[in-house]
Length: 399
Ligand SMILES: *Cc1c(COP(=O)(O)O)cnc(C)c1O
Image (tube, rainbow, N blue to C red; front, side):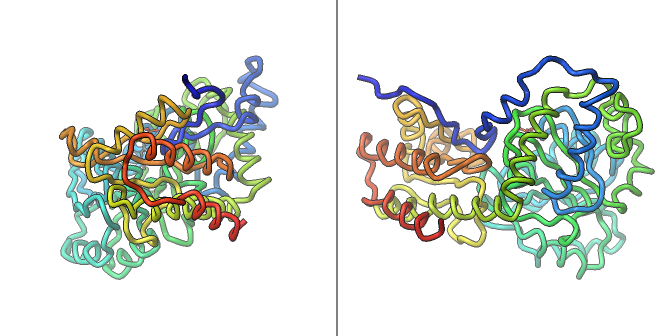
C-alpha cells in the first residue's frame, strides 16, 4: 500500500514553495511590452524590492538565475586582472569566486570551512596586510545554503572599516533575502545579489543586483557588456532597453504578487520574525532527534544559523536513506548534501538539508517534521522521541 497521495511539498533550500496566488497572477495572456499596464507594474516593483533589502540606493532586474546576478555584479564593478578576496563558508562564495576567476579576475580565497562563520578579525588582518589596497572587492554570502551558516554582515563591515580598506563589499543574499534580517544601507553593503525563487516565492528566472553610489562609480571604469550593464536596468528610460530586450513578462506579474504578499500584507519585519520562529521549530525537533546519537546540527551555535535552511549531519548514510524514504512515501522532498567533501559518496550520504524559506506556515513545517519523524521510525534510525511535541510547544509559545 502507498500512502503517497495528495499535495507534495518541496522542502529544499530553493526553489521554494510558490504561492498559488503567484502562479495565478502569471496565468494570463501576453501583455503589450511597449506601453500600458506592464510598464507601470514593473516600475512599481523597484520601491518594494528596495524595501525588502532595506536600501534607498539602486536595484537592477535581470532575466536569469542567481548565477546571472553573480556575473552581472562582477561585470559592473571589476576588470580582468583585478584582485578580489573571497570569504568561503560553504559552497556559494567559492562558486561566485570561481565565476570571477573564469572571467580573468584574480581571487584570493580565505576558507572558513563548513561549520562556522567568517571570522571578522581574520578579515581585518588580511585587509591591513594589503597595504597597497590591491584588493578591489570582498566577496561573501550572508547565508551559505550548503552549510546553513549565516555570516554577520554588520560585523564584517566593521572589520573592513577598522582596516581602513576601501574594497567594495559584495554580499550574496540569494538564499537569505526575505528570510534572514538584512539591512543593506545600515550594514554598509556596496553590492548585493539576490534571486526570486527562494525568499521571494517566484518561479526561478529573475534575479537582482543592488548597488550603492560607490559601486555605481566603479562601473564607470569596469565597462560592462551591453547586456550586463546595470545602468539602463536601474535607471529605466525605455522599457525595451531596461531588460536589454524583451521583458520577462509573466515573471513580472508573479513577482508583483509575491511582493504584495511579502511587503504589503505580511511586512518584511514580520517575515523575518516568522522565519525565525519556523527555524526554531525545526531546531527544537532536531535537538530531540539528536538524542538518538545519529542526527546532529551542522551549525552548532544557534546565533550562527540561518533561518532559511538547516543542514543536518548523520553518522552514516542515514541522510540519503531518510531523504529518499521521505520523497517516495510522504510527499516531502528534502534537500541533498552540498559542499561536504564531494565527490566522496560516503561523505555525501552523511548530510542533508531542510529548506524552510518563503511561503511557509505551521502545517507545512509540522508536515515536513512529521514526515521526517515517520521516516526515522520506518528506517529504524535511532532518534529521541517526541520531537514533534517539542516543535509544537515552541510554535504554541511563539504564535
Ligand atoms: C541558490 C543560491 C545560489 C545560486 O542561485 P541559482 O539561482 O541556482 O543560480 C547562489 N548563492 C546562494 C547563497 C544560493 O542559495
